[in-house]
Length: 621
Image 1 (cartoon, rainbow, N blue to C red):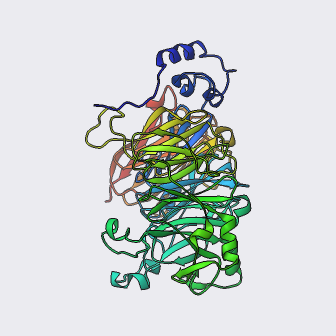
Image 2 (cartoon, rainbow, N blue to C red; image 1 turned 120 degrees about the vertical axis):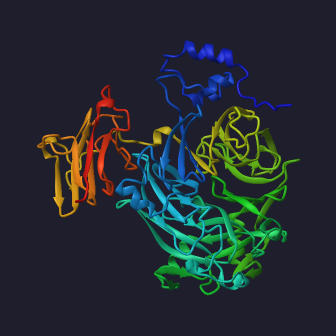
Image 3 (cartoon, rainbow, N blue to C red; image 1 turned 90 degrees about the horizontal axis):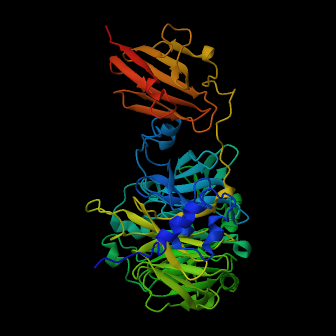
């Protein structure tokens, strides 16, 4: 028998009411509507002329991209190419993005994180990590485009980042897979001695839009998962979970779950920063590497139930909450108690030279909701209440971190990993909405064969929790963050950049310049034609010789919102995109002689079909 999702109990009534108020742009916001006595359909309906209250940024997993949704409508509104090529926009083909990609063609995007000011999202930047090829990226939220990508050395899969500190001083990138420093060959027989789980402290130079590695920490050869930065009184600290502290090298699903406890790594990033300034590190292939067994202080271990995959700091910064996914209980830990344990050296031994804090000295309370199994990740509402996903029992449980009392619960379909509340991991969550990011979506959508899309389910948390909408996503979102829409200030067109030597803004300045076998084309795109050389007999034609190295610098001189042009050369496997006012460059070798049409790939006007030209390649003699 099919299971039904409680989506829209008053669908017809909601549709009629929404149609009546179709043009009422002065109505309450959709978030305000969520707390009023309306049907489920009305709560998620965003009439034409109105916009969603929130942006939801979801990781695209092994697609390598970032998915953007509107909330509460749950409509997908954009895909941002980050770690993988994207033929629709030419990302990974034009010169800027090709250099960013660094020779890779794909990525595995996990755990996006907004830049923060005083612990709140500031709407300026979005950071992300690539598990597949050990990279980190930054996205500009003025243009929704990727601006910088760095390769992170000495790591193999920065899965649990990139959670930023309170004022975006750092984002910390621990590694999912332990490897030898430099990822050099080393027998697995020497795993415990010569492998490391390196954590990188990455800074962001906002002025020059560059990511940089400030220092690294050579942690024990364990696997590191979710991390979170402290807030307010705990802002100088951060926490992250570990698993496989057994240091198993094969059959991890059995051998990495032997011990009853794994650890939370508790570290003071201000103290580590001080160590680096004082020269207390080793130079490893140009990286400043701290070895905790040698440079003592700043890093501590907190025992936690085995195989934890979630640790989250409460909005007031007083507690951090963690749970082992193979255990039924969550544990609330006190930062204040942890600080006292550090000060009093209240240790229960050490591992790999790192002190272990006494569990009972740091633990505030254990929370065990009845019949809830597989606790993973926690978000918070505007009243400080916690919402934890239960992977095995397929539900979200609401509970009070101050008492441990279970307040509410709602089933989801199925197996939720992360969830995301409206600004739910900041110092001031909004409440109203929570989205469950489910790993499995059986019975939810039309069949598309053996592989099903995953699902994101919108939950109204303004009163009694209720699932009111579901949206497919493919592949699964590993994490997401939800930001108030009015915090993001996008631009409509790129401003003129007179310093850009490749930019051309006037038809008469277009030209084709030959330097030996190197050809530079300085052209423009406009509704509805290309002009590569205004003085030529055929200004929309590029003629080169077979073997020439060709640079096409194309400027979109339509300074008008949403008039994007594409540029493709038929049969040359090339396509790029130029936004209004933007200059973009594509570089390639004309290695095929013949006649190749040029055309605009992005609909731009009534004469879009007529926006074409020719790329003529003379054969070698």
